[in-house]
Length: 178
Image 1 (tube, rainbow, N blue to C red):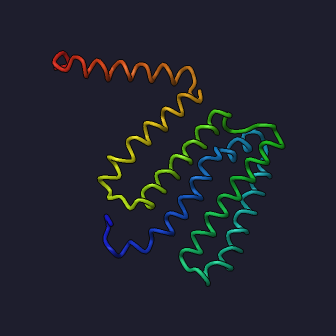
Image 2: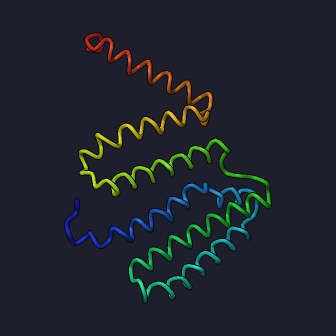
Image 3: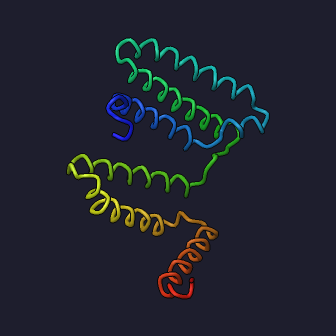
């Protein structure tokens, strides 16, 4: 581990918290959207229910599972708040904070992470070999899948073309850059 053996015990709780914060991030800024639309009571409701669920889950999970239970409680509360906010935003204003393409890209990203995680632990590959043998090809396949599923906007495609031209110009003419 990077920080030493003292921090190894925090690995699982941090992984669990990452799931909750990822769900919260992927849900978009529903709170700000609801506040801008004058739905401050809804935001207060979500916050109160989320906090109450966190406290109840802490009472149940903390004595039995310790720090892992605390991280599970926090993650579940964050996921609950994110889902509640999205549902409320959808039903009250018929809005979603992201497009269908964004959802497709996020779904593909989750599948990508699951594949990488499974390959690392199923095959017990060393870190360096994992990067060379698995990470690079799977990453190329992921981007290929994104391109083929048309999740990128017209502006994204223009940016990719400019990056591609810039990269190929540097590769073709390395002496001209100097």
